[in-house]
Length: 186
Image 1 (tube, rainbow, N blue to C red):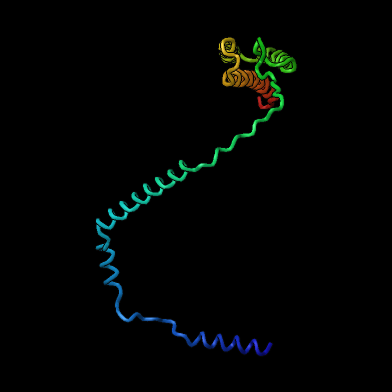
Image 2 (image 1 turned 30 degrees about the vertical axis):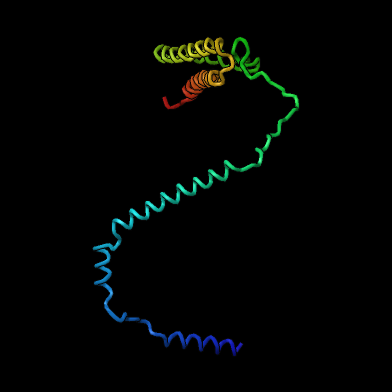
């Protein structure tokens, strides 16, 4: 360990003896300033570089096209799955409504909605009902469109989204009236 310390000490002493300032042989700033003020790169150099790049690009793409077009290897045949295909019906059915569990939940929510609607002021009730009527008319329009194009995934998605909007509105009315009933800051 003593030998290692002496080596480290010698190394540190040698490092301390090095010069900390290096002065250039001549003043470099005037030539740096001139190089910044007037760049030596000419217009012809830039145009030559661009022309060389274009020639290289055209040559490389032509060579690649030649190699690909003259390749005698036959293309690979894709594997075809011969298993029987099972098709599940994904539409909403003839009446374009959701299943019985959805209908039961919707009927329950609708009954609560009708009950909570009575607790609103006439102006609030009119505004909520105009929103509900607008949503239901959109549902009818989408159902009419689906009757002409039953396989339209976009129309089916729109219908589902509109049903969700209707449920959301009914739940919001229920939530608002419940919050008003439990307020005690009157």
